[in-house]
Length: 222
Image (cartoon, rainbow, N blue to C red):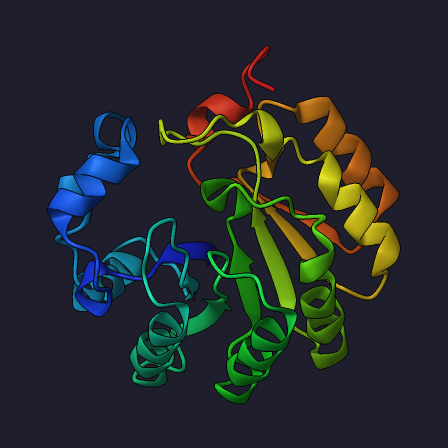
């Protein structure tokens, strides 16, 4: 088994628990962020072994005022210690959209041997179709990097998730036919839209993190 999306542990990040509680809102109630934030890299590796997961992809996902480049540095350092067990997805600075900087960060991500780029535009009030992001998508396509987007549900109360409808992926998939794209959370609750996009584009994939597997197969669950 492969766990395709695991969050970079807090020991490699600059955000504090108090900042997380303030910013993440309902995440504390739904996922017990305070407890999760104390999990260290070695604990994740122990969990992987106990769950018989052969490999995991660690994402440098972020939603707050962290330094994207430093997150990529920390991620690369962490996974380099366990190359047989871990791969990684880096990230870019969405708080300051400058195409040149985004492209250069994509090149750094590739140079580290990371497999993709994790983007969570909804937390920065950024439209994934913003023209300033298109050089990044083009560079990722050329470098063979996968791009993963946060889609659908989230539990921060700082922004609505109405703009996280996964329909934006369809346009990006049309414009970049050789770019592999992952829709994190699989666009839920926009299940019909997400299914249609996945049927249209063989290079779009669905990731079901945050959705309990025991509920997904139930009638009416989406």
